[in-house]
Image 1 (cartoon, helix red, strand yellow):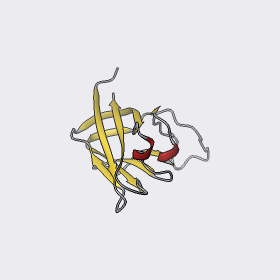
Image 2 (cartoon, one colour):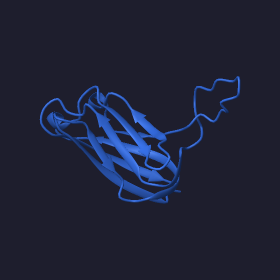
Image 3 (tube, one colour):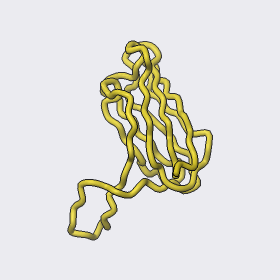
Image 4 (cartoon, rainbow, N blue to C red):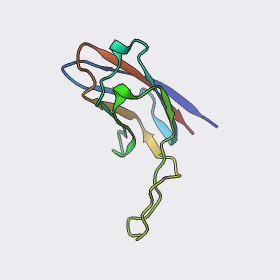
Length: 127
């Protein structure tokens, strides 16, 4: 059951990448991220751009999406690998949702624009 949702708009210019911080403070787990590209192809974030979503208190990277310009609209389900650092076992897939502890989330994009202002949106779903 989704208990909270926020829509963040990302906007990058040729002089810098993009950064946006959630308006709300969240507790619980990040269940899903919906990335929506700009409708007009000339307004899309550039190929090679990297999106990183982090918690402002913990500094945890909760979600990373590579190569934004060639990525279509998508609904992503971030998951963590739950293996102790002392375990000899190496896990390759995660099953636990990333925790969010009374914090705002910041989305940052490296090299988001190759000319003009480019945009995209993120929908964040919490449980």
